[in-house]
Image (tube, rainbow, N blue to C red):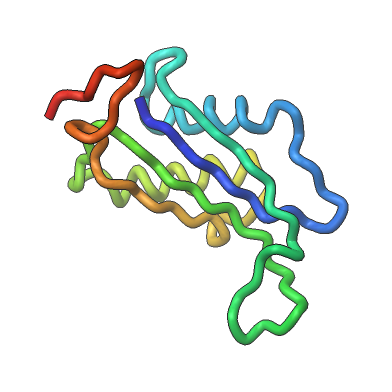
Length: 122
């Protein structure tokens, strides 16, 4: 049930490909070894004018991807490898360098997130 919330800073003139969310979902699904329909992706583009890094002035030539991951359970032992594989997969799909893919793992969903009104059991 991983849910990915993906925000990509768009290069000038770049638009989101209509199939990009599906390609990210497929790539992430492989990393998570999800069953079909088991990895969900929400995708948003951020105009580069709405992104900044301190000390950079008005010109930023970095167009990162920010990924928040919500999973029912987070396996701390495998997290380092999973994050590395996920960053590599998303970088390839989004045509970005791996070092510009930033992943935030949310707290475990079990016991605090409900689907269709049904709380994931702790």
